[in-house]
Image 1 (tube, one colour):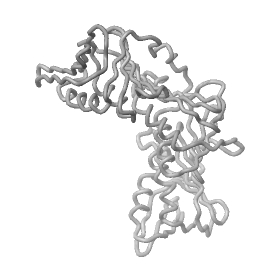
Image 2 (cartoon, helix red, strand yellow; image 1 turned 180 degrees about the vertical axis):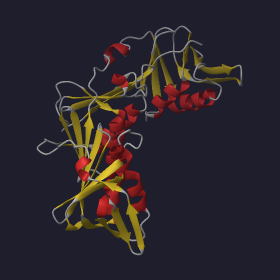
Image 3 (cartoon, helix red, strand yellow; image 1 turned 30 degrees about the vertical axis):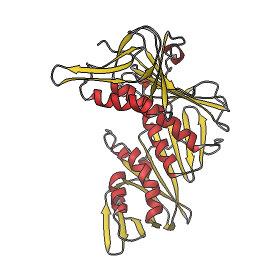
Length: 365
């Protein structure tokens, strides 16, 4: 195996490959990136953690065919710091990789390419072109509320539903829920929702940031995302997502309209006096909204902000971080907080729209 390749072209594949390669795995091969020439002008760069895989077909000048695998992070760091715009890579004896540019010469320990896990095949899969701006926004509005608790496998990803014209993404960690719905012409028509794991969603976002034209295809048990010559294959979570519609309150007895930025700023100040076990108290009356928090170990805070509300007074506690993260994903000047009792979940949504909402479970204060 012998090839020459532009530094920028090589990095285009190595950046995403090194983020997918699993350096913590008990299988050393999963920390590696696969390099395999194809014909005279293409080299395949691939990586996998067995759940998320990437394959990139990059332009190169190949003098001899072959393949090998080397440490993904080490190769990425070496190429990033090469002094010239072009470099050469040769497979030497015992699968060592010799990487040269100008007067710099690296030798990197490698392993045979035949031992590398099989990358899911996307040949013959029907891709549909999708709006990257819309998909990026939907990811931003749901990624933060995915559960990190690995014992709750069914909550470790984002639910994606699509009927071909409208797409929906939902995530929850059991304490809060976020849901976004958008017109999504060209999206696939799915008979049932799919759960895309968090790491896969993060890698999709990376690909969206580097390519303006994205293709999407679902072929169980994978979702494929293609941007130019780079393709992601993400193994779907084989589990049942909670019935999220049952979590979202259908009716409310109290509705408060608040300036989003005022509420966001007040919560950030009150958060300084809160902890994971001691939240922030919302005291709502016709006089407005009082945000307060007290912590015996630190101190207390109280702030009044204007709010449009007519009804009986109510007090409820929330984890401020959960509310802040939801408010940060809204762009409207005003938001609506819908409540029932002090032990019922609160529903936040933009005052002028119905396509995004967040649900936050209350805390005892």
